[in-house]
Length: 533
Image (tube, rainbow, N blue to C red):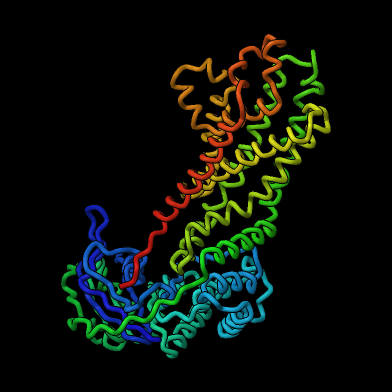
């Protein structure tokens, strides 16, 4: 179904700066439209407003679509998972985007047709990372074309491409418009404008300087080469000199196209979980961190502590320190696994959010993909330390409770890592967050200074730290209270290890739930999209 796009008195302000002045325009079904102008003229801002990704400060935009699934948006950067082969990447995208009830065979057929249409069939098994610049751009376009959108928006689709490749991309977009798709793109390169039905020139203050055919643009500005228009718009003429060229208001509003529902929440969660595991398995650096850090930490624990610390007369403060660092290991593994999970693909998430992805399904898939890894790491750590004599030979039911405590704490730390990953803006900030999040867990965890011996503010702060609760629970599982009467150095922990573990487990579980919900809230705020009108 073809759709017209209407913008009425649209303006945009950022603080005291007016990015877009009040402008109105209509884009007809099947038109190929270029938004052009100098740097800072507001091209990308206008494109995002028209696409429904950014609300205008004033005015309104109408797509006449009941939902977002008839809209495709390709950002300037090629935002797509780089680790997987192209065919696999597109299959995940298709199953996440195509209507509910689409069979696997039908989704795969759409993928094959799309690759063929974009001349990518012979690159299907090549990792996206290894594609050329032009092929990667077409792959990014292919992701959006899987759903056969009626409105297709692209931000600088030819940026960074050589002239021949840029011409190929413009021919591709011309072909889409001839099939009835309304295509709107931004560009700072005049070369491809002549392939468009309409060009919208923005003056340097965000005013609509011209809207019409490229032929009429030459006549209007009195030039032979559209490159000269950029010079005219940048010269000393006041931007208001160029009055809008589209006085006509939008015509009758068409009947909105019916909304087409995508996969349900469970289906999205399952697909995202599978994709997360797939991506993790193909990223060697991530695998090295996931598998190498537990090995290194376990080796350090075995080197630091001697055998027999839990035997009568076998140690002094050793039992408390061993248990504390086991608790911290669970926290550290969960935190580090979560810290880079979202920030490294936030733009991919935003793009998929536009296509209808559920924030809850996305966050839950991150937890589901990493939880088995944390379970294995926790179990191996406990088993190895027991086998090396660093933990006592008590009943396996005790180790089952210790494993549960470690896993719940690691899950809460994973949720904290995901929250931090969702809140920061780049990997460097995530790396800086690691020591800031770890240090309080060590200082106020109850091993350096027992909780009941802390100053009142410290005791209050420790209530919100997972390591404090995990340390207490693990110590109570191992009945460390018995050492508080026989070892002078352990007497300070008498209050720490008295009582049961239920309260600590409830606290850890509450942290995990609250931090997971907070992660979803932050992501929702960072990726909010408008509902089409």
